[in-house]
Image 1 (tube, rainbow, N blue to C red):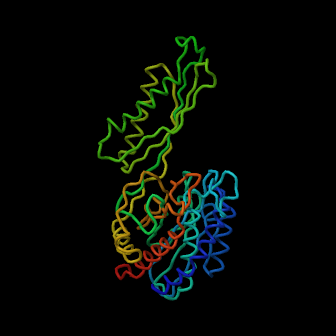
Image 2: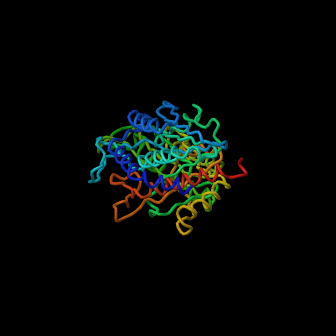
Image 3: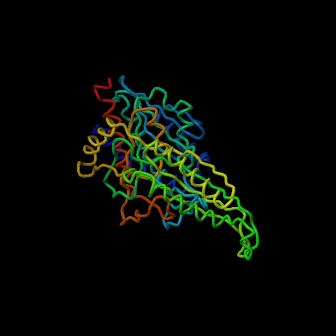
Length: 394
């Protein structure tokens, strides 16, 4: 492993170059044409078997080791976000209104580096490696489902993924057994009243007033009808109604998200939302429509693989750098891989105020400390090799 890690270290400048190229040329979810082409070209030059068009614009690389053993998959997401890049740096996005504001460019560059380093030591591998470059993580239903349906996990025994995370300082890494990231569901509620003159409210059914009651009433689900020890969030993200100061709006739309970790609670909250909307609208004589969209399920790490993370992480980053991750209310479609195979999802610290890597994910000035890519690469290699060399798996 030491020689492989040394090879990985020598590739770090190349990883930075890959990351900066991708950062300048971001593509939105389900439109990663050039990104997929770039990845496939680089993988082919490593003498690794390549499949393109996997579940859309997904790219799969298969590296066969020199010795028999299990097959481990490593995953990186490749899509960007509809955000204007406001950074001032040489590698800022060249595409108006599109930006890698969540680190997927660095995830991709990291996995390319891992693939190249491992390809140089393939004869030493006890088994095979599958490199999954997945599109469309940012937009439900995501790219993981379609890649899995297209055979991305066929023959795979275990799967690992990392997310570079600026809330954690560079040089650290975190994970946990069981639920770690939340299920992310969405709702759209249309309140249909009766419009009219702003000076004659008694002749109308005011959809804005009714929707305002809904915003307040929905908050009682978490505060008054769920166990306070259960992690749960209901947030209304948008409220749109009316177009004039003196006209009572006939229709108002509110949209929001629900975040949970427990499947029963997840279902109960949907039912509770429907109940509150129905009765609130009935109280005012309004009609309504609800579009409730099930998003990604929670990311649930397998206990044995989380234990492996704590062991391997301490070896490659140092014991003091590894900690148990708090519950994260963000969602991730890596959850689908973990529903199909044993594995673990991990956060690698990428925050560093001295390098302006202190903005939150999805912020217009988001950036990372690129040293985090090397830490992530070491962790992925360590996890894969530890699994492949585990005599209990042979």
